[in-house]
Length: 210
Image 1 (spheres, rainbow, N blue to C red):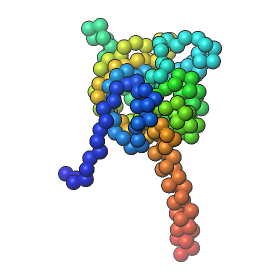
Image 2 (image 1 turned 180 degrees about the vertical axis):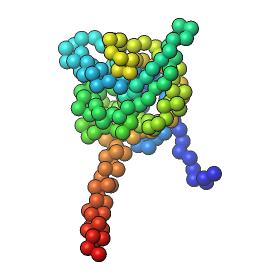
Image 3 (image 1 turned 90 degrees about the horizontal axis):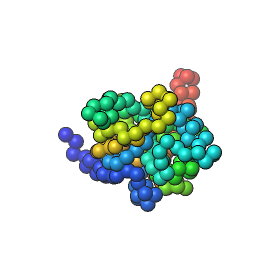
Image 4 (image 1 turned 45 degrees about the vertical axis):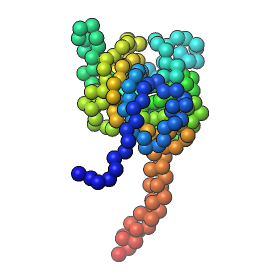
């Protein structure tokens, strides 16, 4: 067993307030209780923007809420919708849409895989919003943290694309990979890789000349 100290895990209730979001630091590990709205659909997020621009009501209130890029599937048992699985999807797919959604809905947390781009980070810093990174391939672990599905919207879409609101209990652990102060693990890694690239290319050129 490693003697290295293990990171503390913070227990939070969703939705966060902007102040709670700003209190979190890059790299914090978190377990989540409370309610979150999820969808894995591009068309779903396009509909959200259309509703924001037209002033139409969304199927349920998302103002100041948590929104995760996550597919889901449920079964009905004794009048409740219980999860067969939830599975995060890649957030960068939605980079063109998320700045408008974050600002328009005042989201205080977003979650998924793979991070989000600079314009999303800027919107998150402006609003007071964090990004929770979920481990890929951990669907069984994440599903254990989902209590039940409370409601759905836009039911003309396939189940994974509908807006779905879930009750969570000890969901995670997830990692604060973009904080509400403009710091991003993903941008940091990209910069470190860019800084190393000239040296790697120089070594490869030298190796070819031998």
